[in-house]
Image 1 (cartoon, rainbow, N blue to C red):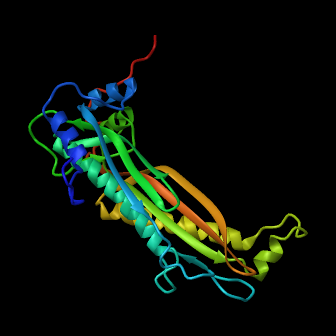
Image 2: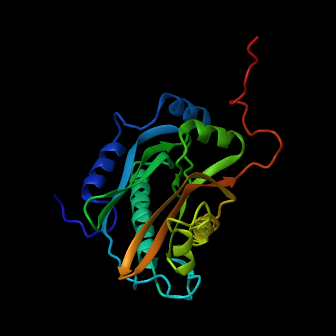
Image 3: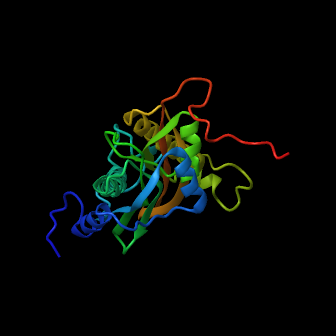
Length: 285
């Protein structure tokens, strides 16, 4: 196997792309409705494409308790520039993992002459305690004619939804996401509210932690959409997980991780009528 310096496509992926670019039978991840929808929108599948990255993720930057003492400890998000780094290096590692996988997928699509990738599935798998694999997998598509876009578009949407968007004057541009991790110390008030005998009351510390984390993930998602130059975005998933850690004796923190994934959209048609008549419907009588 050829040596690889980490730049460009891995040799195995480059060889797969070379075979696909040479023509012949292609593979795809499309369902029958997705393939039909793409044909309506003017796209043809040209091959299955993938990007992958395996990354060791440590916990550098975290320095113990999320807050100390007092009645109510602060919630510290990974975007907070005024406090210690917290989980910011961890979030940066996740950004790098997903971004690299998507970039390699787009490179493979460009190598086989595609204009975009549809139905993209983004996954993160734990290989062992600290090693994770980030994968982007989708179907590369190509439009008719000799004019090519200046860059590859990508979307989580299936082919039939891409067709609906194009008919309505919208074009998917980029996969976009926002990730945030926040930490909050279980202060005196939180411990009292979460105690066995507290009854049915709100644990305000946990509520604040979750609200802050989700809001920060949505802000980062919005910034990613803005940086892509898009007019808006369709959200595909909003996930949250919470766990607790014990950095020291009689010290307990709660950590929340929020993720938002979606597709950025560009509006290319502003008339009241649809730009195509191919997606008409007939009354069943």
